[in-house]
Length: 343
Length: 106
Image (cartoon, rainbow over all chains, first blue to last red; front, side):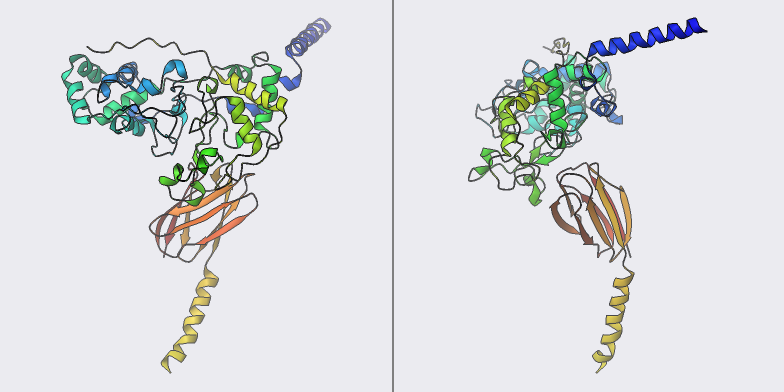
C-alpha cells in the first residue's frame, strides 16, 4: 500500500513539475478562455457540404468567366495568398476604378450571421450572386452565365454531381460557391493551439496582449470582437477620419435607417488579420499598430461615434502587446489544390 | 348635455383600461433579449432594461409599431406601449442577432 502511495506521490510531483516547466499559471489559458475555441463549421440543412459541391464551388470561385469581360473572378478580390482579401485599401471595379470599401476577407465567413460591411446579405448563399450582379464588380449577364454553364459539358456534369435534379441557376451557383467558402477556415493559429493547452504556442507578449484585448478597462476590444470568431456580427461607427467628409459613406444606415447606425460598419473577424492589411472598411490604416493607435485615441470624428469609443490610455508596450496578440491569429495556409477549370 | 353625461364614464373606462395594462420587463443581457418571444395585450408596455456593460439599442420597423428608443448604457431602461394588435419584431440595431418577437392581442 505504502509502495503504491509513493508511486502516486512521485507521479503527482512529476506532473506538477512538468506544468511548472511549461510556465507560470498566468501564461496558461483559463477555463473561461475556452469560449474562444471555434465550434464546427455551421451550414444550412438545404446545402450540406459534399466533396462534389465544394469542388464545383472552387471551380466557380476561381473562374474569371463569371465576369462580363472574363477578367475578374471571386478570387480577384478574395485572393488566397492575400488572406482571402486583395491587399488594397479599397476594392477596384471591373472598369478599373477605386470603389468605396475594402474587400473583406472570406476567412471564417461561414461563422458570420450577417454578411458584407453593411450587412445587406444574411448568409453566404444570399451573398454569392451579389458581386456577379453588381455592375461595378463582375457585371455579369446572368442569363448568359447560366446558358454557358449549361452548355459546357464539364460544368453541366459537375452541377449534376453536386446538385442532382436541380437546375443550373442562381440557387445552385450560390450554394456551390457558399460550400467552397465554408472550407476557408482559420482555427489552428498559435492562439488556438494555446487555448488547446500548448502553453508555449504564444509568446509572453502575445498572452499579455490577449488579456489586454479582453480587459474592459484596458483594450476593451472584445466588446465587439467577441468570442469565438472575433466579431459580434454588429455595427459600429469607429470615428474614422473619412466620416468627416462632406458626404461620407453612411454604412449600415443606408440599409436600416436607425440613427445609431449612421456611419456604422460590421465588426470584421480578426482571424488571419495579419495577412489582410490595410485595415478598416475604408482601408485607412496601413498597419495593425495604426489600428490600435486609432482606438487608443478614442477615434477622430466624434459625430455619430459609437459610445464604446473612448480614450483607452494604453502605453506603447500595451499597444505592442495587443498587436503581437493579433499576429497570433494566423493559421498555417490551408492546403489548396488548384481547381481544374473546364475548357 | 349628453356629452357631459358621457364624459365621466369614458374617462373612467380609460383610467380602468390604463390601470389594467401590464408592464412587461425584458432584459438585454449577453447580447440577447431575456426572452425570444412575448405575448402582450393592446395597451401593455414593454420595458427594455440594458443589463450589459455596453450600449444597446431597441427599435422596430414593424407595421403595428415603428419606434427607435436610441441607444443607452447599462442600468438604464426605456419603455414602449404597444397600441395595436398584431406581430412586431423588436431588434437591437447595434447587435442584429438580438431579435424579440412580440405578439400583441386584443
